[in-house]
Image (cartoon, rainbow over all chains, first blue to last red; front, side):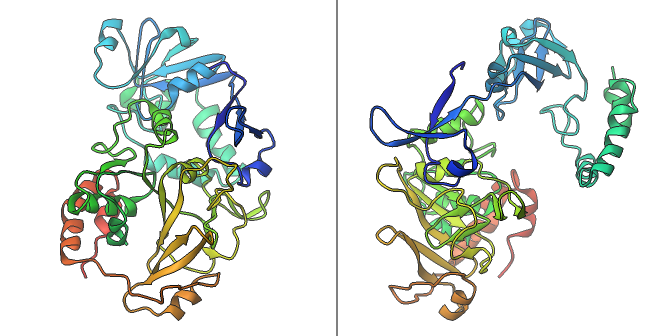
Length: 171
Length: 234
C-alpha cells in the first residue's frame, strides 16, 4: 500500500507488546481507545509461483494465498509458472486471482516450480520429499547434505526435476 | 465433544472454523443440520464452506467488521483467566517447547462475538494457573476495543464457562461417569463450581447418526485422516 504503518485490531494487552518492540500502542485520535500500530513489511524481492502466467507477464494466483498483497508490497517480484500461455487464454481462466504484469519484474518458465508443495490443477504435495526435508533440516550438518543434493550438485532446473522424481515435467 | 460444541451454535448466526480444527468443524456441521439450519457456516479451505476468493485478507477484513458471531480457538496453555499461549512454553528466547504461533488468535479472540476454546486433552500442563506467554488475553479493559471473547471451554472431561463478572473460567458441567475431583486433579487451577457439578448431557442417538453419516462425509473432503479414525462406534 506504500504507507508506513497500519492499525490492527486486538493484540493490546498481550505479550506481543513486549515481544515486538516495533509494534506501538497509541490512542486512536478519533475514539481515544488503545490501538496497535504495525510497521509495513516491504520485501526487497519476493518470489511467487503462479498457477498460470501469460506472455505479457500477467499472473493467475491461487485464491487461498495472499500473493497479490505480497507482490504489491515488494520492490522486485520474480514469478515462476509451470506454463506460459497467451493473454486471451489467461483472461478466460475460471479460477484464480489475477495480478497485472505491471507488478511483475521477471517471469521464469519453471515446470514443477512449486515442488515439493502443490500447484493446483497440476500436481499435489510431495509428502515423501517434505518428510525428508524435515528430517534433514534438524541439524546444520544434515541440512548441508540436503542443499548439496538438491541445489549445489545440480547444474540446472531440469536436473532438479530428475533428482526430485519429476522428470516427466521437464520441457 | 462435537455434540457439546454443536449445542453452542445458534441458528441464524455466522460461525467460522479456522485451520487444523476438525473437531469444531464436526460440531458446526452437526448444528447446521440439526437446529441451526439458517446459520452461515465458514470452514477455512473447505470447498463447500469458504466463499472468500481473495486470500486471507478478505476473511480478516470480514472478521474486523464484526461479522463473525462464533469462532473457535485452541491453546498450548490455557489459564483460569482465559488467556491463551500459542507461542512458547518456558522462556520465550529458549523455550522448552516452541508452539505454532499466534496466527489469527491475537485478533480473532477480540473480534468474534463468542469464542469456544477446545482441547482434546485435559491435563494440568495445559490448564495452568498462569500461561507462560500471553498470546491473546481472555479479557480486556474498557480502553481496549473488544467485541467478544471466551464463552466456553470444551474438553474430553468437562465444559468450563467464562464468567464475565469475575473474568475467570468456572466449571459448567462434568462429562458422564466422571467426578468433580477427577476433573480438578486434571486442572492446574482451582475450579469454581457455582452451580454444583451437573453432568454434561451426552450426544443423542440423532447426534451420533448425523455425525457418523453426512458430517463425516463432508469433513472427509478437508480432514480425510480425521474422518477415517475419529468417528468411533459407541
